[in-house]
Length: 404
Image (cartoon, rainbow, N blue to C red):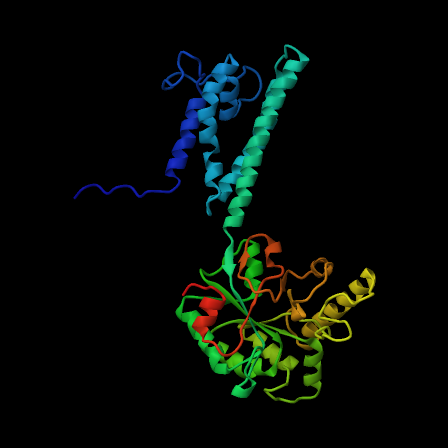
């Protein structure tokens, strides 16, 4: 039986290239030995001062600018190869390493030449500027590749927006679907390899955590009682998760005056807590009493004639009241996200919301989101409205553009 071939490692070629650069850079590249294998002892760049990095030796070991250029360009290619490769997911750490190394080249090069006796002030300045330029170039390329790699590691997260559900076909429409349609949605997602997640999972991802291969976020706005009556049991049946964002004032109203009607009632604080305690449901903010579209008001938008300070105080007051109600009356963890009522907002709204400590906002713009390690990617997440009358396959594949 023949000897087994060694397993190929994706970084083998890269490691070999780096070793080659290091070995080549230890020998002086003079016209007599350029391109020849290195057989002698390493020749230091300067007798005094700390030894230079490999690329620094290549840059300064030549007696003339012409010979120096002959040796440096192949080395630069090998040296910056990992930075180019860093645009691939999984290699972005190398970009950061080389960015830091670029800065170190600059600092060390300046330090070495400062210890040498300059032939003149302008000669010293010229040398140091060369080293500074090389260091900045490496730093810029490394940082740019690092950012590109970070962006390329983003994950597409489709978000669905539900409202109410009823068994009565006469009431089905844009904001009301049947329990059967919701169950078919859960079946479709499971059969096609999708995993339902919560907003806390997205926040964890921006902090270095992981997400399932095909994540999907299901959200329910307004906190209707039908969500507890129909959606919650189905979520338990299929071990699926969803986010519910209640209107605080209506939750207070139906907690104080119980009225369990699937047609118009809203969840009570007790029902919201029961769902949250299951681990399958996450409760988020949908304002306390800003879910209205009358008298010039539309959700959390600024009112006509309202000053910026008046708007700021009104918005923060309402959202804080919703936060207190959820945590104190519901005994639920403080919401980290805001679902914009009607998807409406003003120019200054995002800044105020971030200042309040929210880590995510949900809009009504229909688009598939790409979440990256950047926490800002969690703001104004797009959502697709799930309405009645179309199959799960048609909704997810044709409306949302998901691949089955």
